[in-house]
Length: 249
Image (cartoon, rainbow, N blue to C red; front, top):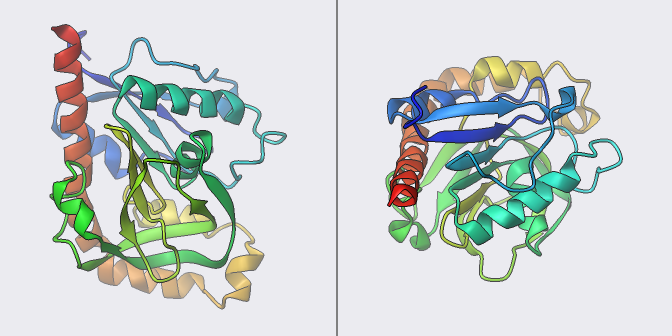
């Protein structure tokens, strides 16, 4: 990548939770990525100095599992600093939960896990949101990949709820000017989801969710989800480009 190319730091918390479609969508707008793998020993910075954006991906641990994933401590500090610095930030699933909890919100186990393809509804607040306004009109429910057993139960002060669902109130929010948290997984294709289904998930079994039922969901909705959620990825990339241009002035 050229030195003039905006670079987004991507924190991948687990081997089978990669950036997926988001990488392609960023590249479409000339935004590069640098991926770090803290589970392999990469250090998580507490602030960004050489990057114009941040994406924090999902994982099987929760925001409180610092004993198992000690890098979560530094990640929470980083996610406080990027809000303060107005650095374009996207937290996906665990990443969104970390964004909320690090800035005063609360996360806990939910009694309504979402696994497979779920439908989320855009609230009226999305019509003025630069990330989500190009995805779909407010009031419309659309499908998106889901896999979570924790949920944000309280948003940080001054956060704005943007997307919701019947089983999980907080599906997407914005905090500050440029930090978004998502509960869902717009980056996920069938290959990524099928890797997640390899796990012996007792919760999934208790809900009666079979691998075959999720495979059928992706056969029905997969290509449409990719095409729909591309608008989110492109919009985030454009936010990064705009932020980088202002840094140069």
